[in-house]
Amino acid sequence: MPPQASPDRALQAIMPLIASGQAYEAHQKARTFGSRYLKAHAYDIAIQVIFPSARELLKAGHAGSGSDLALFLIDVYIAKEQPVDATSRGVFPAGAQPRLRLLISHTLSTLLKTISRSSLPLQAQLAYGGKLSSIKL
Image (cartoon, rainbow, N blue to C red; front, side, top):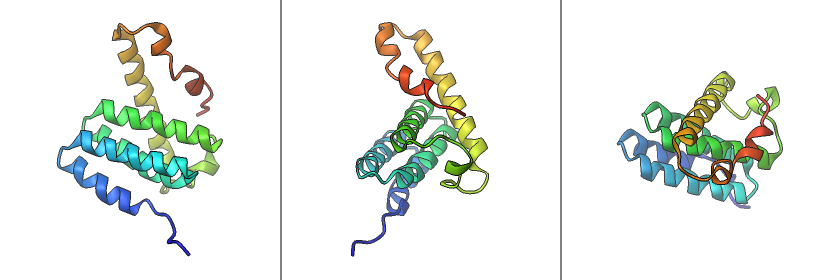
């Protein structure tokens, strides 16, 4: 029987990169691991990798990378078809729900600021529009 999937290996590869200031490398590793877990329908493990990675990148001042992972986290919740509520909160350590709301709020704020300064066509700016509107916090 194959070993039980766990976020430990991914987090052991990602967190030291963030701590050493290698945000780009950490971001790419988090996306890679998250994508693999998402494709395997291991949603909870994807969340357990993406959430702390996004949080630590945001805390380290890497808003672009942290925001991208936060949007990816929303995509995982959508793929899982589970809203962010009391039931899904059990995926995170106790007390994480307020942090998730703060993470999403910060992400959306950063995204809107970026869009308002962007010269991209409106269609490209609204690429996430349908997905974000379906999130209920």
